Length: 149
Image (cartoon, rainbow, N blue to C red; front, side, top):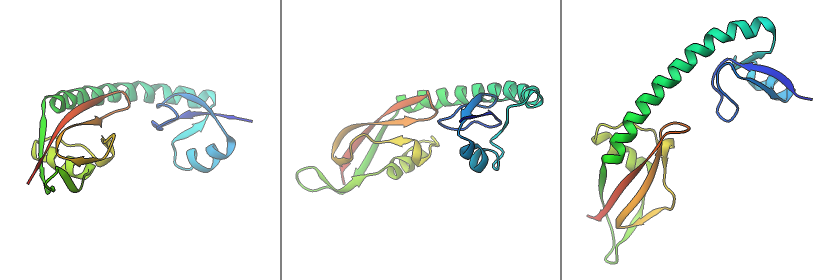
C-alpha cells in the first residue's frame, strides 16, 4: 500500500521538487517526512509547492548551465600526473579519484571526489580516460596522462 507524497526538495533516485510520488508508508514516515523532504499530497500542499517548483526549475537550469560550462573546460583539459612507477610502467599503487581532484584544483576546476568515475583502476603509465559526472545528465570525459616520476 503506497502513500502519495509531494517532494519538497530534490531527492536523488526518487524525483525533483514538486513531483508527486508514491512511496511506501514506512519510507515516508521514517525518512522523507521527518527530514522535510516531502509532505503529504493534499490540495493545500499542492498549491504551496507549485511556487517552489518554479523556483527549483529555475535553480536547476542555472546549475545545469554552470555544469555545462565546467564540462567544456574539462573536455579541453589533458591532465598530466607524475607518479612513481617501476621499470615496466606499472605504478606503485594506483591513481585515485582524490589524485585527480587535486590535479584539477591546480587547473582551477572544482569537482568532488564522488563525481570522479574511474572505470578501471589506473595502475600503469600512459593515456587513460576518466568520466567526471557533474550532474545527473551532465558528464565530461577527462584525458589523464600518467607518466613515471
